[in-house]
Image 1 (cartoon, each protein chain N blue to C red):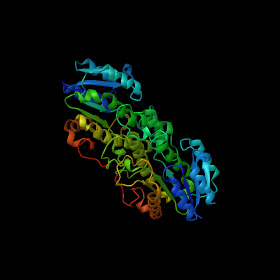
Image 2: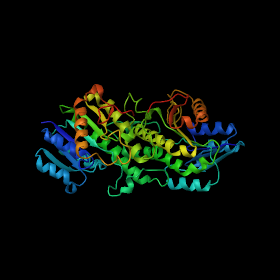
Image 3: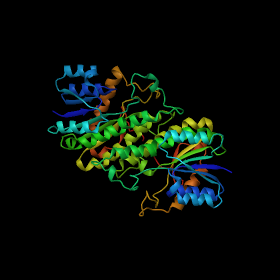
Image 4: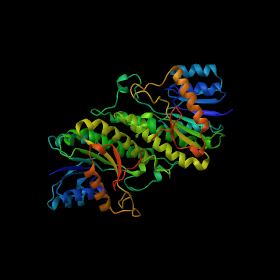
Amino acid sequence: MPTVLITGANRGIGLVLARQYAADGWHVIATCRDPGVAADLAALAEIGTFTEIRALDVTDFIAIKALAKKLEGRSIDVLLNNAGRLGPREKPHSRDEQLLGSFDFDEFIAQFRVNTLAPLAMAEAFADHVAASGEKKIVAVSSRVGSIAGNSSGGYYAYRASKAGLNAEFASLAKDLAPRGISVAVMHPGWVKTDMGGPGADIEVEESASGLRHVIAGLCPERSGGFFNYDGTEIPW
Amino acid sequence: MPTVLITDAERGIAPEFVRQYAMDGWRVIATCLRPAAAEELNSIADEYVTVEIHALDVTDRDAIYELATRLESTTIDILLNNAGVVSTDSDNLMALLPQRMCGLDFPEWEKLFRINTLGPMAMVEAFADLVAASGEKKIISLSSRLASITNNGDGAYYAYRSTNAALNAAMRSMAIDLAPSGIACAVLHSEDLDTPSFPAMPPPEGRTAIRNVESLRAQIAALVPENAGRFLGPDGREVAW
């Protein structure tokens, strides 16, 4: 039975990814900041699937190493960095803090920690677990908004910068982990109807999650280092 | 007399920019962290009366706004952000080694984000009005060729690559958001493309530095709103993101 570790699995795309992988018979290690209030995730663990819930704040790099140590000896086929941040916790789809002239640098740093630093901290901590697995994949949910070439509307400074930073480091990660047989990719989930995407978004969470799972299933060493839309097409940097 | 403001002007290839603009008769507002320790910059200022040096930590947003207030009666034709720091410890040569997996230093990485990415963003926010009031209306950030995700051939350098790619992403938005004010933004890098990434980290010196800065200045001079928002190298070619 393959194993997937998903960060930020308590809601949005992460929750539906966990649900779909569990339904497919995968062993799911679902992490979130506070399992005590993650009722949907708890329900998933209770219906007889192989879901284990772990408390993890992805910006706590010591906690990441501690969890990796706790899971030592277990193989992880897919490390799925899903946790992301676009706006303050109380208004997750706000972009006011990122308008030129009213930059909120505390928010910028918070996004940099979640979107850029955390995925590499996870990759560093769990590389051995992934290398010991059958599938050997490390992916991150990035965003088309992080495509510099695709930016024709401006704004979104913190989100664009932190996701472009993620894309840049995962391009390096793909090179550095190739000798260990690990494939790496960043993915665009679409504009999804979640707390972050808002109600006016394009697609339902289920469509995004199944698209992302299809992209992950098709990832191989030859496609490692790419930036893929949830429909499988490549996105320019 | 046109005015150029250059940040972190004591570091890397920036002193050569200061010298060449001064030689051409520009007023040069050069900022650096510790003016007293900036020997090369001070000797240039001794030689050219149009060069003035101001102490500025680009991670101190209040200080940036204070400087903008002090300079509010002047217009800035070119704001030149010299970002692209590879390490906060310039005496530590080990820090110049590739930032590889195993033992990644996240606090150091965050410091580089504050210097390389947020520093230029704060400068643009504070000085955009003074640039918009000038004749030339240009904002340039010096990035690194390692910021090109497309051209990442050899991996590593996580903090350096990611903070510079983040800067590129921000500058691209600046180019779009400031176009209505008539300001043209671009990202440049001063490194030679035909050298390996390490040891290309130390800035080009001597004749190479002079030639590269001459070439970059020609590109800045040719920058117009219609071709803004791009990433250019010293050979004049556009660099892929």
